Length: 400
Image (cartoon, rainbow, N blue to C red; front, side, top):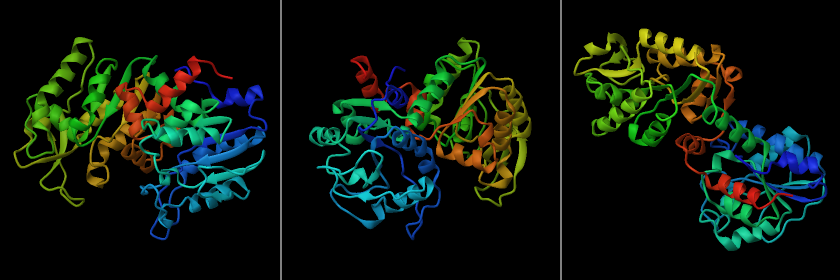
């Protein structure tokens, strides 16, 4: 993907003394007292901010946080906790600026955090007048919030249309490179793991991947629908019978290319959906009408793990069972450990996937962990992301 990168802007010397506006993703979880409970996104934003400061730029950073109402200030929507944490991590004071749309006072070498951008009227609808005002604040716009790249908003898309320079920050550039590496020119075999409760929520991903991958491993309720499509009884398991034909079409598309959707040969069942439910391993052909399938069985897990260890590239989005319950975590744990042990380039994304990565302590063994949820899924689907499209368009008409 051809976009201008902030690293190139800095290397050219253009950023020195210039006003740099960074759209970061600082949407961190807060507890009832307004304290940050997990700061990964803030830490991920630091390389871009440091790059700008070290280049001698006057640096403005903004982000959304939560779901504020435009034009309404509520303390719980404020980036104040983020400003404090940024200051701690950078070892410097980080002023928080409110009512900043009409002008920001910041000098070269200084850093300010601009209050929650979704409080600005017109942000979410990508209002042109607002976008032009934002663009007038800076000499360089840097998009470094991959998690928002699928949204056309004033601070993700509109500003990039009108800013003198519009480029991708290091975090966004890394996402582009990693997903491109995994899907555009992958080392074969290419395996994709897609888990989740519903085929309908990920049907377009499955259809897109079926044209490219060598193995499409499905898990959770999605796997149950595919088992139903393969003629297996799934009892009272979560599934979407109305999408059986679509599942069969995905299986046929893969088979026509010499690829496959591995159907579980054994499963772990329970009679109720509960953390203390009794788990029973059964052959996939022996599931009873009152069974709930809550995980793949040990033989299936071992077979899939062996395939993943032999893969050249792996894309992972979603667990293969109810890994939150100890009795039904073996499948997801086996998948996670196989990915960690594989020599393949691996990329993983999605909230449940990141939770599994953390639970099994394999973060350092995954090639790239995506910071985006919806944006990651839409890139897997092959969709054009508005915030990336506009950066491409700007690159085509000339950079610096």
